Image (tube, rainbow, N blue to C red; front, side):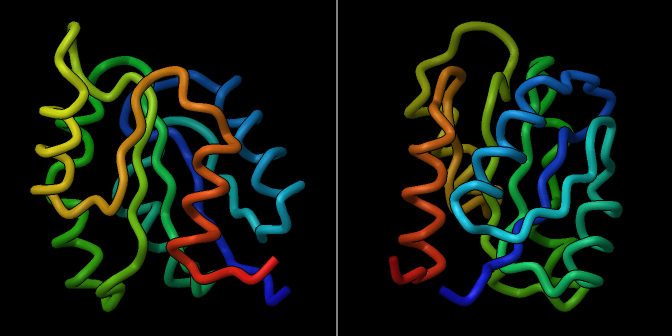
Length: 138
């Protein structure tokens, strides 16, 4: 399998590192090349790392509820930087309060994210969809 490259990290002022480490190991074990930017990552850092590594996808985590604010404009910035069509995933506790996830998902789709995941989504779910979206042959 040709290795696909993922840039992962926790966006904004979020310092939740445990989920990030779990995703790093799960994605690596699944055969992806993973560039882990860690916590408190800006949009610009995600984009710079994606350009530098010729990444196939950017996978953003957020647990402190500010994901929606932190992710605004990400697709436009990717496009401006020459990353048109790069796969954008976001997951975790990405909005404040209890909101129906269908509505949250619609808002992130409108912001240009290919997929968004609610809290408690397993790494396996993301891996399965990444492989499908990136056309990875098993």
